[in-house]
Structure formats: structure tokens, C-alpha cells
Image 1 (tube, helix red, strand yellow):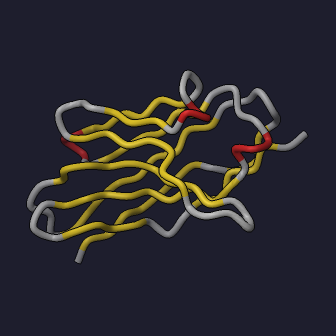
Image 2 (cartoon, one colour):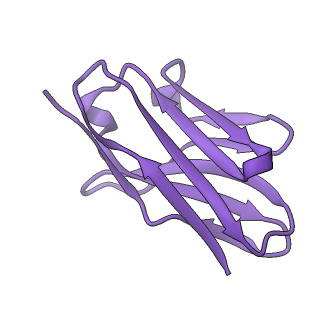
Image 3 (cartoon, one colour):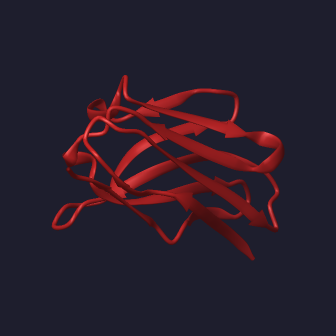
Length: 116
């Protein structure tokens, strides 16, 4: 059984910062990719950032220069540092992991609200 446990999120003013963390536990052979997606009300879920084991990263254009993804390989953890937050970043953020020989898994989601 694989579990993704997210922490962080909450309410922040525009221009502020938040950090999201996600830890993977359970029967894990090897994690290939970890990342974060988000879904705003009435919109489709979109991949925000991801990091492949080895360091290759992906960012959606709208967050480039503001968000940074990192991984702690020893702890099977991925962190999303979000700076200069905008109201349009408001969404439920979901942690994602692709585990070799097992498949793709999602966290339960954490709300991020950017509002004054």
C-alpha cells in the first residue's frame, strides 16, 4: 500500500509565500517522478511542477521563476516552494508520484488560497 501525505497550504496574501511538502510511504521499489498538480474551481487539473529522479524538472509557464520544486531522496519527499503568489494560484494542490513497477499515485489534496 502506497500513501502520499501532504502538508502545507493555507491562506496567504498576494505576493506571499507558501511551502507544500509531500512524503511517500509504503511498498516502494523506486520513485521515478514526483510532482504537484493543481485544480481550481471549474478548471481541469494541471501539472504545475515535477522532478524526475536525477534532477530534470518541469514547470508550467505560469509559475516559472516563482515556484521551485525539490526532492529529498532519502525521505521520499517532494517540496514545492511557492513565492510571489497570485490570486490565480488559488487551487487545490495534489502531490503526485510515479513509482516504478507500481504506477501513479496521488495525494488527497491541500487547499492554497491567495487573497487579501
